[in-house]
Image (cartoon, rainbow, N blue to C red; front, side, top):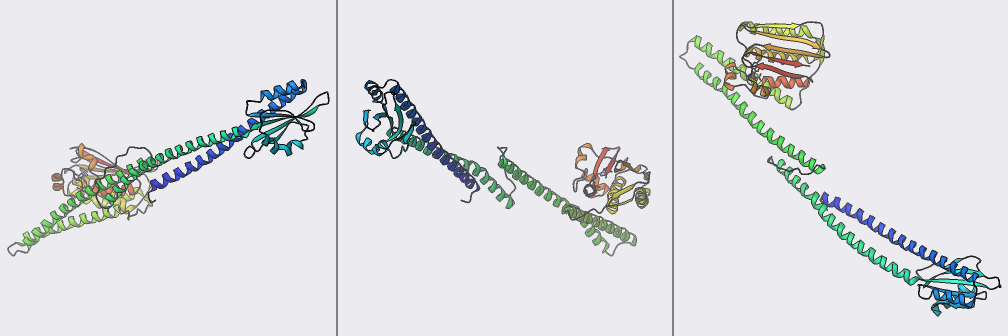
Length: 453
Ligand code: ADP
């Protein structure tokens, strides 16, 4: 019995069966008891009735009438005098009277009384009703009710209960079989699905028909399979992009290294090629650094260590640091930061975020344009925006720019350099601070990246 469905169905089966048996016994007993009680009350009422008639019209004729009235029924009657002699009796069996003799002869009661109530062992249940008439005559009207009738009813009842018991057992068994099957089938399908998943096959299709816990479980497994499938294809795409990204600078490095090692180069050419080699090596170093950063973020092994620091001096330092690169390209970098508020963030990480955004602004802006770094505070939050009037991002691409290795129009990006990792790092860092990042951009008119932390 290893299947959970079989266990569940068996428990259900046993509980219902025990309840069924208990109920049947209880009902069986109660029905019989109330039937016996009813017969006893009727017997007492009839006996009292005969006694009243006898006391009002005491005569042989009345005695005959009483005997006659009980002749055909399940009841019998005996009328005795004070010495216990029988004045009249219905068709009651003589041997029964002899059996009852010890009770009848020693009878001494002033009230109506049940003499024999044991319907299982005695042929009759018996009641006695004392009478006394003015003439001094007294005695008993003794009523008998044949227990054969009760025993017959008990037999009938037992048979009906037996049929009901067997029927309910069969029905229960069918319910048990259906139930265990209904629970088993989806469970088996889910088990097969999870086995497939563990073997690396994520093409799992579980149909979710029910809204119960089993349906929810099937839904969760299906979602897990879909997520794993998506992750697998994302990983493949990611690996393909990385290989591509790494192979481009490597090709340059190998090519130019070969050229530099040739003896027929002028000094000027050699310096020029060496510069290209240094540039490409740096690009690769930057790419690998970013990749490592991303990997650490995915593993959740990196933590943000927040502290309070003055906001504007922090941004002024960044401005000083990057301004020369902007000047080189004839782009004006302006900083708007007013007030003396404090920032609660990881200064190193925040610097990385802002420099990344400024780098992009610089990369994707034309000469003579302007980039604005704007910092303000709103309630508890700090809002940092980097606005450029550069080439902008096409509307259809805007949703994807935060994805790893995503670059708008690859050819364009290649012309500008970049690897498509910067913004995904920025997004992860902002989220690690519990903040959000938004972008508004118009193709050809510029972009604004806004961070709220
Ligand atoms: P990259 O290293 O290629 O710049 P990012 O992840 O930083 O990678 O950016 C992803 C893509 O988003 C870039 O390829 C670029 O096309 C676009 N992008 C990012 N910032 C800007 C910007 N300020 N203006 C125009 N395009 C941008």
